[in-house]
Amino acid sequence: MRMRTFIASALLLLGTAAPAAAASGDPTVAALQTALAQHRVYTGSVDGLVGPATQAAVATLQKEQGLPVDGVVGARTWAALGPLGRHRLGSRMLRLGQRGVDVAALQFLLAEHGFPCGIFDGTLGMHTGAALMRFQRWAGLFPDGIAGAQTLTALARPIPAVPLHLAWPALGLVGSAFGPRGSAFHPGIDIVASLGAPVSAAAAGTVRFAGWNAGGYGNLVVVKHGGGVSTFYAHLSRIDVHPGQVIATGAQIGLIGATGHATGPHLHFELRLRGAALDPSPALG
Image (tube, rainbow, N blue to C red; front, side):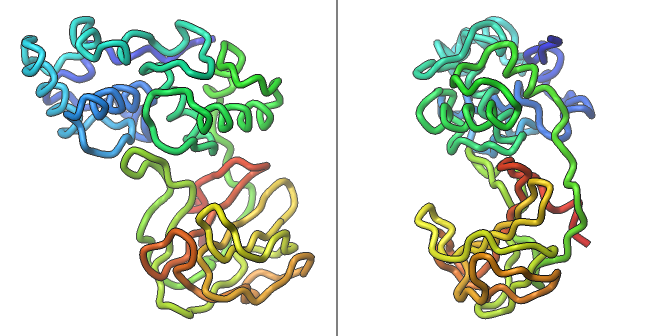
């Protein structure tokens, strides 16, 4: 397998832009950001993008550790990160309880492929282990919770495209996009709208779930569309459908709310392909 190499010294030279291929977020950069955050010198989003905040954090770490402040992430800078910076992705089998920037890179890759594991912290704990096994099942691998060559090869494959066209499920602005958010990963989009505004099905399908979700989604509707595709409509103030009901595109399924873990009225909208969360934005129109 052709592994992604960790950040070469030229990549983080102050003032040097990241390559275009990293525009969607590079796990090696995300791993560095995670380690810098653990050292309390980086407070930005773990997004895998080289920017001023990441470069400034590298410089701060170097200054604190008595290294030349050149913004270059070389062997001495990695060593300054302590045990967390010791291992590179692919240099060892990753198992429950291990810690390092290779684990942080794994966490980021899992999230990008639709299996977020909570906080990016560089520790292979229970949440990361569970996400890893879900991905392994999704990829047709034995779900042993160990990230070896087969798992990393599967994670190097392109992220699937959304296989259907979607109608907007609510009228409003996108307040939070799909992707990295702080030290975690947002697996859907948040559409900000007025309390009680209608929410409609983004595509025709069958209601698989309609009720209360104790995991933070609050009042939740899940619609199955076939081909392994499902859409999720969370934080509703009211649910207008029932499980087993066949609905058309645009059919009202509930009202905008702020139930569950929500700070204000909005619709949290997710799209999943066989359980993997994909960015629904390219399919919306």
